[in-house]
Image (cartoon, rainbow, N blue to C red; front, side, top):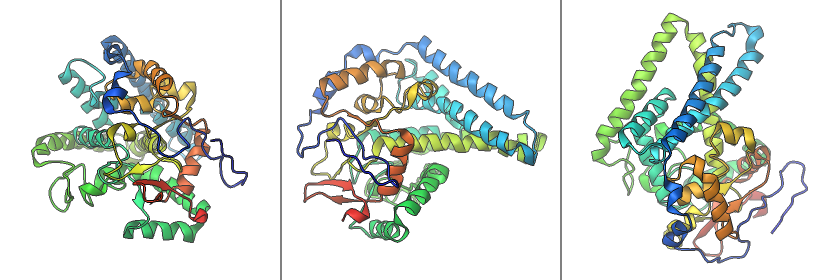
Length: 389
């Protein structure tokens, strides 16, 4: 159903190709997977290496230009432009590492793991622990208890009540601005360090760098004890990168390193959070309790959005083909467009696409998605703006 909101302070509500009526019939996991032919899983190493070379070479050029910008106050606008451009370009390297984490980059698992480990370590991402938590996210998408990353807070919990009270006190505009800053600027480091916005079943806090107390204290283990060697390898990769940054600071200057590496780092993280936030959050996207959740139902609550040809080129279509990625995450990005078309053809009433411009959708999510409440004892929870209750 098409809905529009005329208030100038809010973007239009989403228009999505998803069921408006309650109780849609969802396929089983087997049925959903079967509609995508096996050849879409076939990895073409040449295409994978070309994608990696494309993102790496553009990133190298962008970072190289950063070494030539003067460290002066008058150059601040140029530095800001550099940060946005280089961070956006380098986001493609993040996506290729993400593809490695799903075994969708190369048929040789050792080569694939090496590529993902190096790329993510360069971007200060703990590759193997991220790979584990991301797999948990895919296995439990939109599961209210067992989900991982961007799991909403329920309005009937102490944490949810505090969030809701803050939303009411600040109002949608100020809350939205604060939410944008917190999510895009520090959301990713806070998730890695403390499990912020992670699943409640895994305890609070959780950490991608340590699996002993006080972390990993939930009903389920995000990082089992036998995962310790992989966590150590991830930490060593980050340690090596941090040492390299310290060495560069000594040779050049701390300010130069902060500008050349730090500014794009913030932009890469902002893109990562924006993508995942918009893929899994909106006012009409349900999250399910254990009694209502199924794998297929959860996978089909993700959203494809219109990022345009340039961003789809630089980021390998990660935001515009995300539904098919959740249906089968081993499909390489160069096959994802065909998979997306097949899914939309087979399940036009279930595959979500929201044509809202990205900046308007981001503001809607930031300003209106605070806590979720249950819809008529259905086991389905939705975000609702405080003023609508």
